[in-house]
Length: 447
Image (cartoon, helix red, strand yellow):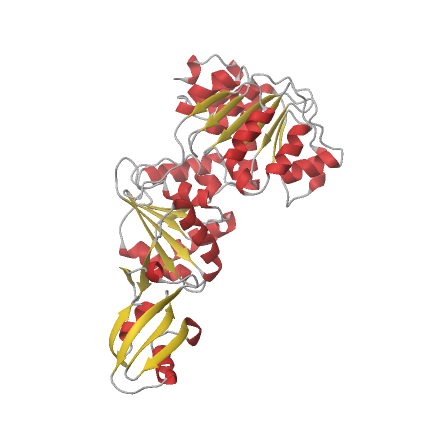
């Protein structure tokens, strides 16, 4: 449906036209009419256009008097992005919007209250409420954006407290990519006969996305990324966890004569549009992005997604790698995993229900390696049966192992019976055992 055909205020239509929005997305077309009348629960994947799906109904009932709409979001970057969208419409109405979040001066935020549309993270919203600077007792709208992610981040009790301070006549709009039990319970308790709209959810297809990881330390991380980029031609979307890292990585890649551009939440819309147009038109084939800035990116032909930084929440991993492998095309996702990332990476594997294969990036080459975690014990150690060339001792084995990059900390118990024995080696180093000349025969994973 065209926005011009929708029964919405002409000021909103003008704002959308100025932003270059003409056609409504599926979630906008289906959710807006119901959100203009009452409570709604919308399940739709990231990047589907949910922001306008709740902002347009909000502005249909704006008067410009006091705090009228509170939009709760999980992160600072998302608060900035949603407020920026809201501000582009608010200009046509002559009303004020504000983003409130932690990590910046609270005094500036206090000075800009009240505002017709308030976009905030739960922690800072509660802080301002408890200090008496934010009154939400008369708001008309309460919006929960990315409700499942706020649940993941431990905000559920804060959200309940905030909801309890609103008036019972307010309209509540809940948007989420998934619907965990806690979110459903929240809706049942606080919403009034909500209209449920279930669209596509965030999923990945292992058949169409080949997933790999590279073990690295922080020092070698960039070098291994450059090796990957130069080894395989394609269209790359590279994710970092912060905008500072995005800017830094983009500059370093250009210094290596690699055609990279970056996109993050603090960029002006015009600059972001130019970057995206260049990426879509294949004038650049490497885009470095934050999670929030990438929302809404739907570009054909992305062949590789690289997690330069491992995401801290498993759903973000799903959102990221879902940018490739679309329309039945093959895609590849590669995560660069440092020792600090291992805990988060294991959570991702648990969440998606599969082990991700390891590849090695050494000497300018990218090679798929067998992932020995499948035969490792709970401590990550793999049993190795060996046969030696003659009688040897435990220290002989350790010294030989160190020659091939297996440090003593990666070696577990060693048992020797004549010229045979068994030892345990950490899964990340066990592939090097075959290079040890002290052994005549090796069986990795044999118990």
